[in-house]
Image (tube, rainbow, N blue to C red; front, side):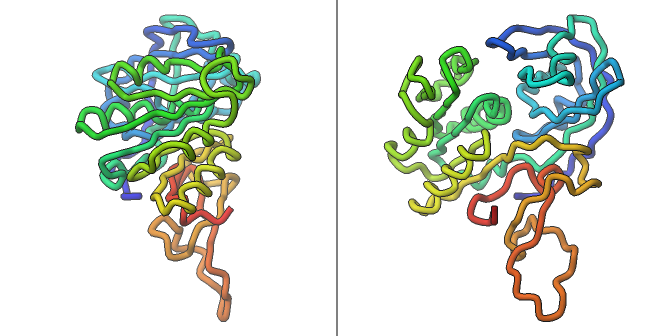
Length: 275
């Protein structure tokens, strides 16, 4: 992925809107003009819960336009529960934008966008950018059940076809979203975000069909800025995203190093990952 010129900063934002997208899933809109201007599709922010008593949580930037940025928050613990409880007018500090985002120029002219669950939050900006270029794209979107499939209509409004899958068959295809990808005409490239098992399947499918794939890895970051090395993943030593350190020991034959998902990622080329 290309290095981005954006410099992360602390943005003191105000909640300007919120909506219940699905059970336990809230989209929080923030007044954050500087963040909206700086964000590249696929980047994320570290959000400080307003009580100040809990660690920051990493969230992909969902929407970014004009003076507004939105975040999709799923309730999975006390930190996110505090965030989904925010009301209009509340203040919220966020650090960002962080990470590298997707390399849109390398996706070609026929892109399969694959999202699992709230991984959708990291690919809407990708879809909007592709649509603005006139690039052909299709969304393959899967979740546990129909209630967990949210905001597919935002992609349809971009005239991007949407294929849905649910684990329980309550909406769309009954099975994994990657089954839909297998059955489809091979695209020029894949952009994906979702749970690790889904991303591993996407990587396998891409390798079998010789399709370049960019994967945004989901992780519960501790720091979000690469200081703690708590989110490392194996990557080819020859990758442009491989850190220059540590230097290989004399005679070491290992062909991979560890990259930080929050710093060198979160988006990686599937064929370069060693997980």
